[in-house]
Length: 349
Image (cartoon, rainbow, N blue to C red):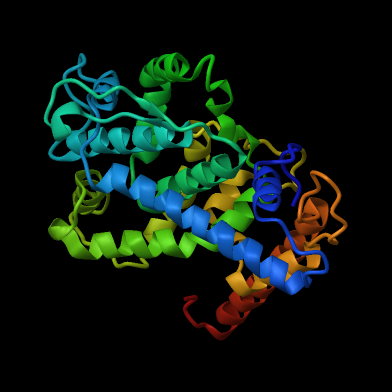
């Protein structure tokens, strides 16, 4: 499980955690690991609550709506398709742009409690080490889990990259340069280790939230949450309502993985063919470890309490190695399970 050479954003979060919380000399690794994992999970869930409020509790800003207007086809009049498909594509554009802004620490919203043709002054959250990791992980997982299983997403992203991305970059540059320059595309620093840890802690929370919203149907709050899913069966499935665990959903998510990584401007390159990409980790369950397993791995990678100034509470290289071992073990179990089910003629669950 090689990957990006950067030290990543998780290390910065860990170092901030140590400097603000402190660790009692002689504290047992088990206690320290539990403290780290609990605090990190709480931080991720808090960041997701923020994105939840952006996506579900209000409409898009005028700025985001106007940017997506540049993606219209048919001479600039409509998004592509017939029936509900143009509206479906439009809403997907507005949703993923909201996530993009979130990952760069920029919040835009309509003035006048959401009724004005003008926006409020954009609000910038400085993505310091303790905030950057959570913003990136939440944005990545939300895009994948909420929208990654939608057909046409790759086409919408391609259109956005072609027609809208220059406008997005211009806006973000205006808000972030020079005072918040480090916010800009900070999620490029996310590593495989960063994503496996984050996905293991937060995936189930976002999946449960998404499943709950979908089950509510038209009663769900949030136009950009409920409408793409309501349109899904018409645009993607010949007017058939999907089962919650329909294999087609996972297939679409895997087909969209590279497009999502491109849109989020992640470092999705591989050093060699045996490496794992961030897009693989984002959508394949073999890279999501049980929380109990993750805590055990963290315990094994907890550094001693030497009090060295600036030292991370985790040995990041040990953490990477232990994660790799556990992922390989999980892959092996999955292969054996698949072979058994095929051999016995049973349907793979």
